[in-house]
Length: 197
Length: 197
Image 1 (cartoon, one colour):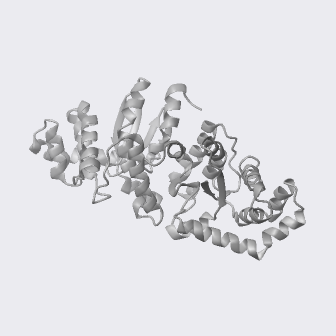
Image 2: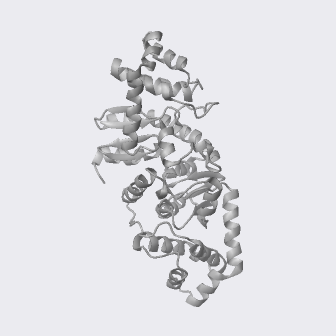
Image 3: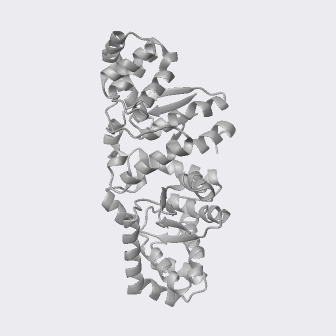
């Protein structure tokens, strides 16, 4: 099992989401897709969204689009960035209960809606629409996102992620070993192939 | 020419300093080693030293030593970290004037003194000792580090680096394209081999 923590508004997490399953499968591992809310971790660690930081922000926008080209992954920075992702994340928690095998398809659908078509994934209607595309009733999806048990499930998930040291995204844990960033795939692959180093 | 910006107290810059010349040489490029003082850029961008940040700090220490092992580069985190590097950086400026061809050997000597033997590179005496190892008179080296023109040269260098967008280390500029971090070598090598992407 490879634990893949992400926030739907993180461009580096989007890039990693398009790469992690292929790498894990190469070594017979499956990926557990675990949404979290970075805003909560950022408040604890005193961080700010990357693109808000003077000097670093300009570079980051350049690095994000260059990294997408480097990996051959389509990406257009959304006009509104970052956005709240609580409803989109609740969609994952709801699917874990209703149809867990649909989680990966949903995660990819949300990331791509935001980072290739600039859709407003902070909107509950947009999220319900993406769930409807997977064959769910729109009304059932809306009710699911608003279900108190789902909300509590996400709250717990975020708390657990912080307890595991997740302070940014993507954050990938393999056999208890933490790897932060889309730029740790070389080390992740080495770990999967040869074990601890 | 490949411009390699660094602060002597940055562990990721140390790792990159042990890799950049080989990569550049593979494509017929030479490396210009440009010390800067990250504290100045950090004040502008509101950043803090990596290891001071809650959650992120613990991970970083783990990632630094794991990355060193991954690349096969000896590294022991110094007991005192980070340290002021203004005198060590002035040593580079003095060498640029006195014996520019000795700059790379000096840069490696300072980094290795700090990151493999835990020497106090914030000490002017230690810096003068490292310059003496390269064949300079100790007294001449001490005078050189304290020379007002050298001090002004470094001040200007730091200002220039910020004007070029250098907010962290290592920061590598190839043909005007900025790359931040020890984890951008794959993209740097692609750029050197095939040009813009």
